Length: 181
Image 1 (cartoon, one colour):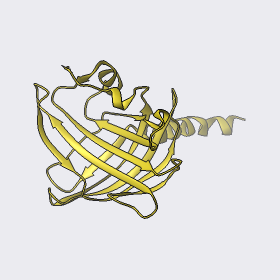
Image 2 (image 1 turned 30 degrees about the horizontal axis):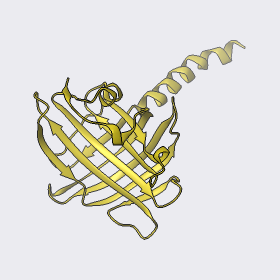
Image 3 (image 1 turned 45 degrees about the vertical axis):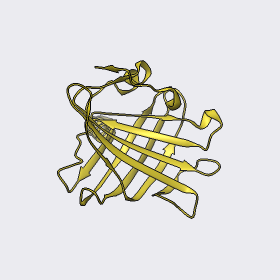
């Protein structure tokens, strides 16, 4: 019994390390813009509105995303990465192509940088690449998990990373940014 107890702390530390390694996601780019150290990520869905099923994962270098979306506020001096996936009928995990796709699994990705007055400083739109949706649950305490490999031809480079976003219960069609935090 004592011999087993010696490895228990190692197992606990390894488990905590593995769980914290997931974090909110990552964004690695080979160009100066876009760049982002992900502090928080959330996702929301408009599939409940009867439209084509769409999920949006939003990663940011500042916390408070869901609260700011619900209140209609942009976050000052913040960089966002928005990754959207949609499918013609039922949204299932898989590989989504940026732009058009013969499989009906389409993706889009954009980055935004806002200054201290919440004015848009810069924007870049992915011109190609893929987004892989591993899983999602669009409900309170649900999550959206996946990865991406993106091309930003206007910036002359690529970006890749992952998202581990928590569900934010907000209707994307109702978001109207009127404030700045």
